[in-house]
Amino acid sequence: MIFNRVNSRRTTVIAVILLATALANSTAAQNKSECPVRVTLLQVNDVYQFVPVDLGKSGGLARVLTLRKKIMGESRNTLFLFSGDTISPSIESNTVQDGKMLQGRQMIEAWNLIGLDYATFGNHEFDFGPDVLRERVRESKFKWLGANVFDKKTGKLFADTQEFVVRDFEGVKIGIFGLLLPETLKTSQTGPDVEIGEPCAAAARVVPKIRAAGAQVIVALTHLSMSEDKQLARCSGVDVIIGGHEHTLLESMAGHAPIFKMTSDARELGQIDLNISRSTGKLESIDWKIWPVDENVEKDTDFAPLIAKYNDLLNSLDQVVGQTAVKLEMKSEDVRTRETNMADFIADVYRRSTDADVALINGGSIRADSEIEPGKITRRDVLSALPYNNRIVKIEVSGATLRAALEHGLSGVAPGEQPGRFPQVSGVRYAYDARLKPGARLTSVAVNGKPLDPNQTYTLAASAYVALRGGDSYDMLRNAKILVGPDNGPAEADVLLKEISSAGTIAPRSDGRITRVDVAKDQTNCR
Ligand SMILES: [Zn+2]
Image (cartoon, rainbow, N blue to C red; front, side):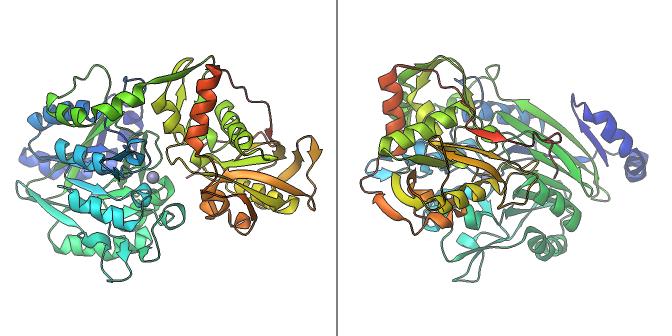
């Protein structure tokens, strides 16, 4: 196959590597001088809001609609694919309208409007539980796919989705199936009746069926980690993987399948053109282009009714609540791997709001995945940081339990990983060495200036999710004595809003409370 990404630095390398295969595969078609059938896949993934992000500079589904119409005008065989994560988390999804929490309804309306064809489930699709997701699936005018997501009660696929679909374009057939990362069982609210199978096992079951149904080209629409996607590429023989989940622009290859992932919130639109031989049905080459979705793209007016419908909510989110004198660091890759100024600030707010000795917040709870430049802070900025609006609870733990919690939080630190459990803290200073065995990585821990005493009792502020529900597998906190429970504890976004608006201007600084002893020389991704 020939792979050609427009303007890619990698094009040359990939072209050289694949030259031999390319020559072998394309000779037949060239001899006949026939035009291959071009099937265009449009891709977005991890889209949590339909309006633009980054102060209006990027994203926005009205702009995506403009691009979609333009591309469809040039390529009649187009499928618009979404690789998961949309109904949560966002402020909109947690907003009550007409007496009911939106819980992602607004995103389904947006996808219906924009004309999505297929979506795969992301882990966050289960954040409101399986019943809400079933309701969202019913509202969708497009098809959801999840070949490894089962309903144990019926023994069928979750929400009665199809195992795969096969589409015919000018006589060539494309098969598509969806896969969700099994880790969802631990990180979201799948409930007792949902089972998520291993991706390769699901592919081994489904791919032969797709081939038997006559498809010559197979697309896996996935919401997996990159290492799982690469494994899938090697184990399954699929032709292309349209993925998501990382929030990083990734173009990789394993087996013979390229893997594409956009960042998030429709900051880019992926266009992947599959060129398929009319006579042999073989995938001859792939061209791709990543379209930036930015201020140079006009907003399609067909999208205006949806903006109008949610106008009041959107306006209230634009309200300015304070200022920051410094850049606020809240990128996922930072808050899940190291101390940042905003993670410190949030952990301090947690501790103060309950008057606890220490606070612990799992980095994955800080959701904004952005940096706020010095200047205005809007309500949306604050609520995006903590969209779940968890209750903060206060519990009593021994020093030994606190140490176990910190060790658990650090156990996932590894090159290329962004563990949601990473412990951001207040009232605690700790150092760790990621070269040591998980579970024994702490090299020092001090609580409010004194070494941690395993036998002493400390009060700990944490979210109800982490402290009471064993969120991110912090099970060691589960049976602690509750001093302030979820009914009396403050809501996290509310206290953050209050702190910022009463301060007027904030300027948080990291104070070195978290030290990584091994300044890893090789922190590059290993997938
Ligand atoms: Zn995800």
